[in-house]
Image (cartoon, rainbow over all chains, first blue to last red; front, top):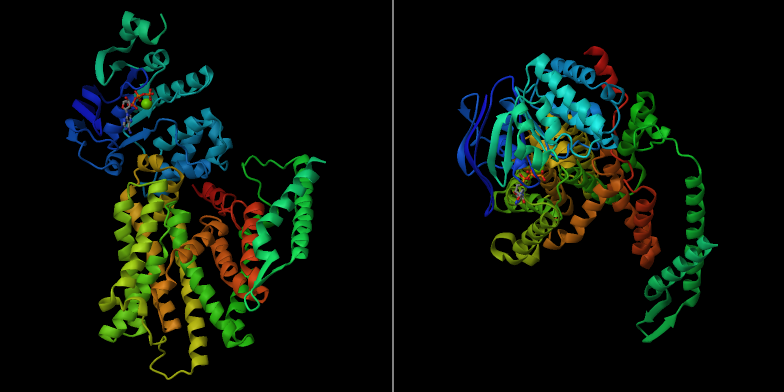
Length: 235
Length: 403
Ligand SMILES: Nc1ncnc2c1ncn2[C@@H]1O[C@H](COP(=O)(O)OP(=O)(O)OP(=O)(O)O)[C@@H](O)[C@H]1O
Ligand SMILES: [Mg+2]
C-alpha cells in the first residue's frame, strides 16, 4: 500500500533522512522505532507531504505521491495524527472531529462517523461539547486519533501517540489501534519511541538511527533482538 | 494592608505619569509655566481609590467559589441568552436597525458625518477581522488597502471619468488584488516577521503615493472627488450626506451579513483551524496557501470597497489619511472587539471612533480618557468586548438528533 524508495529528506543543509526504504502492506500494522532525533517524525512528514523528500520516491497504492501537495495526499486517503496531538484548543470535541472530515462533503456520513468515533472512544462521547484544549493528555490523544479517522483514511499515520501518557492510557490507546486494524482492516504506520508497546501490537517493525534504517523484521523477532533489547527495551 | 500599600503606589505612579500633561501648563503668551499641583492630587487620589476598589473587588470574587461548567471558560448566562435565544436577540437587532435608520433625522449634519466615518471604520474592522480575527494572521498595514480603494476611485474618476458606482466594485477588487500581493510573500512568515513585513507594506503604499506626483498627485492629495451619485439627481450637501449615510449603513450591513456567512462556511472553518493550529490544519487536508491568500484577499476587499466610499464622502484624499495610526486603530477594533466576533468588532469600531469625537469637550484630556478606557477594557474584558461566540449548545445537539 505504501512504499518508500531511497527517500532522502533535508531541512536546509541538514540531511535528516539518508535513503530510507520501507513498505507497509494493506491490513498491516508497521512500526518505526528510534531514539530522539533519529528521523521518525521526518519520515512521517515526508510521507504526508509536509517535508517533501529531495531524493527517492514514495508510492501510495502504486502511484507516486512525493510530488503532491499535503492536502492532495490527505484526499487520497492518508490521514495523520501529528506529533504532540495538536488538537484545535478552542474548538469543541465535536468541531475537532468535524475538522477531521474537512475534505468530505457527505454531511450525513460525517455525522454518523462522529458517532462511530464516540463509540470507539467512549470518553469523548461524554465530552462532545467540551473544548479540545481542556481535555486531558490521554483524551486529547484519543481525539487526535478520532479526528484522523474522520477522514475515512485507508492508511493511518501516527507519530508517537504514547508521548507523555500513563502506561494504562497507552495500553488502552494501543488496544484501540489493534481493534481498528482487526475489525476494520485499517492499515497503520506507527511511529514510536515506546518500542515495547509498539512492537507488541505491530506485525512488522523498522529501527531508524540517525536517518538510516538499521533493522527491519517481524515485530516478535525485533522484540527478542539483542540490539533492540539493549537500545530500546532497557536490557 | 498590602492592598492599600499597592494602591498607594499605583496612585503615585499615575501622578508621576500624568505630571507633564496635567500639572504643567505652558502659557505661550506670557511665556511662563503654570504649575497645577491640585490636578495631580486629584489624579493621585482618584487612582488610589479606584485601584483599591478594584483590588478589593478582585479579592472578593476570587474568594468566591467559581462556577465550573467544565467548558474551560465561564460564560455569564445573560450573554448566553443574548446570543442564543432568538426571542431575546431578534428584537434587539431590529431595534438597533431601526435606530440606525432613524438616527440621521434626529441629529444634525455634523453628527451624521461622524456617524458615516464610524460606519466606515466598522466595515474596515470587519474586513481586518477576517485576516486577524478569523485566520489568525497579522496585518499592521491594513489601511493600505483602504488607500488603494480611495485612490482607485479618485484616479479612475480623474483619468477615465468613472462614476462612484462603477468605481465601487473596482475599488474592492483592487483592494483584493493588493491583498493577494501582500499574501504571497508572507505565506511562510509568522509572528514578528509577519508584523514587520505587513508594517512595511503599509508604509510603502503611503510613501509611494506621497512621492509620486505624476500618477498619484503626491503630497498635494486629490481634491474635488465627486460625491456618490443618485440616478443623476442634483443633491444638496445635506441631502448628499444623508444619502452617503444610508449607503454606508447598507455597506456595513452587507459586510456584517457576508462576514457572518463566511465565518460559518467551509472556508471560514478552515481559517479558524489555521488560526488554532497551522500544522494540524494542514494535516486535515487544508490548503494553507490558498486559505491564507483568500483571507488577505477577502479582508482587503472590504477595505478597498469602503475606501471608495471614503474618497467620495471626503471629496478630498491625502496620503496622510492612511498612516500607521489608522492601521493601529483598526487593529485595536479587532482586538478590543474580541478576535473573530462580529458583534464585538462592530461595537468596538463605533466606540473607538465615536468616543474621541464626543470627548472633544474634554479637549486636552481626550487622549488620556481614551487611553484609560482602552486599558479598562483590557483589564475587565481581556478577551475583548465579546469573546468569540460559540454556538455550542444549539447547533450540535440539533444535528446529533438528525444524524
Ligand atoms: N524544521 C527542522 N529544521 C532543521 N532541522 C530539523 C527540523 N526538524 C527536524 N530536524 C532535525 O532532523 C533530525 C530528525 O528529526 P525528527 O524530528 O525526525 O526526529 P524524531 O525521530 O522524530 O525525534 P523525536 O523522537 O524526538 O520526535 C533531527 O536531527 C532534528 O534536529
Ligand atoms: Mg518526532
